Length: 187
Image (cartoon, helix red, strand yellow):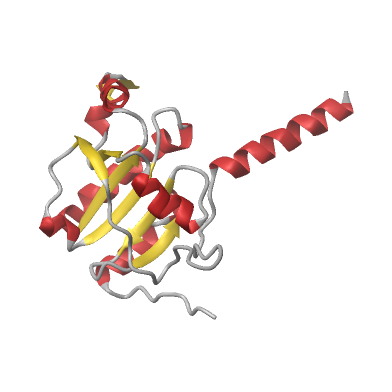
């Protein structure tokens, strides 16, 4: 019985570690995406929710968050991302990107989030469908990130400022918006 308990704990810890990325400077090898690098272009098939993206939103601070409808931590973080979008208004553009198809996302947004509200009632930021994984590859794979949710903060200058779990980005996002964020020293 003790063997099964220890095995269950180890499996649970392994699963939890795979679902929660730690803050990461991203450099995984030669050519990998890291904080301080120019942010890759965002390639989306279509906007699934929210107002259109335009040149003005691209010139402000951006949060690029990777998520999926089946990801529990992603769903639990949506109210927090919505609060951040409302707090910062047009100073920050939060864009949730998924590799799922539009009907799946639309069905999710129409589904119940509890308290007689749908997910569309809760989400206050833009959501988009990745263009055949191009944005996921340019950000997630290039930065060596392999679990969701993961967020990337891009400064007004188009430089990647921070990579990590969306629930850990309040301080860095505030500093980036205020212009007080300091990029870490690299070797």
